[in-house]
Structures are given as C-alpha cells and as structure tokens.
Image (cartoon, rainbow, N blue to C red; front, top):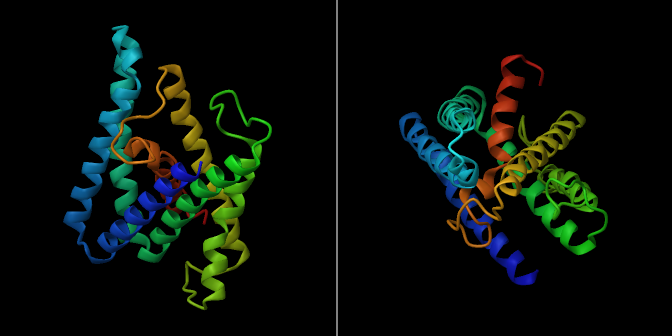
Length: 224
C-alpha cells in the first residue's frame, strides 16, 4: 500500500500543480483545446475499457458505446468545464477540483487502512469505510482554508459549501462506480497505463468528469 499510495500522491501533486497553473493563466481558446484533448483521451480509454463488448460486434451495443463516449466526452464534458471555468468563477472551479481530489484520496487511504465491509459488488475494492473517508476528506479543503484565513466567496467554511463538498464527493463516488462497472464487465483493471499509480487518465478523473456536468446543470438551474 505504501508504494502505491506514494505514487498516487506524487501523481496527484504533479497534476494539481500543472492543472491549477494552467487554469489560472490560460485563455478561453487554449482551455477549450486542452479540455478537448482530455476528452479525446477519455473517449479513447472508454473504448479500450469496453473492448470486450465491442469485440462482440453487436450493432446496438457498439453504437451505444461509441455514441455515449462521443456525446459525453467530446460535447458535454468540454461544455460544462468551459462554463464553470469562465462563466462562473475560477475559485469555484478550484473548489470542485480540490474536493474531488481529496475525496478520491480519502476513499483510498481510509479504505486501505480500515478495510471492512464491501460497499458494492460493482467494485470489490470499494468499502463502506472508504466511502465515509471520501466524505470526511472532501471537507478538509474548506477547513484548511478557514484555518489559514484565505477564504473567498466560494472557498469559505459555511454550511452551504460543506453541503456542496459532500454532494460533490457523493457524485464523485458514483462516477467512480459507474466506470468501475464497465471495467468489471469487460474484465479490465485500468483504462490504460498512462499515469503511474493511477492507470489511465479516465481512472484518475472518473469522478470529476461526472461531477462537472452535474454541477453545470445545478448552476444552470440555479440550485446552488
């Protein structure tokens, strides 16, 4: 676990620094191009994950997999990410990213440390303790920000943001289970070997790419 955890943390830090720097200094065109590249990689890994299903050459299954991948990764994901970054607020976008990362790390650390009863048959490595750890860790960014007195409009320790962080963690976990289902269905452990300690890009951001469109819809309908 120690070696795997070290890889996971190191990769997360590198990604976090790179993404945060890019988000702060990029313009709209470069950001859209970046998200489209991410979408293409995820789309490719989505097809790899479902390679066994695609090998059956069932027209309806194959069409559904391709259409979902194209529509979601190349249309919905870029649209929602662009809207949240440029039409809402950069700090709010940061909050979403940080909560997703902390939720993922919390689930891994607590799940591996405590173990216990399995959460679902969809993903045998997921435990109830890990799920609780994800919820707990998702609130840590707000606590750290409060302790270091760097609160802003969106990065502030209050009930609304605590609830939002817990909600994001929930959606993040659902996204993880969604893609875990397809990996299990096709006997795949990872979507690829692109990132050390994480597998593929889709393995790393499976929760985030579900969270962004959900939060986008919440903002459109002014729920939060």
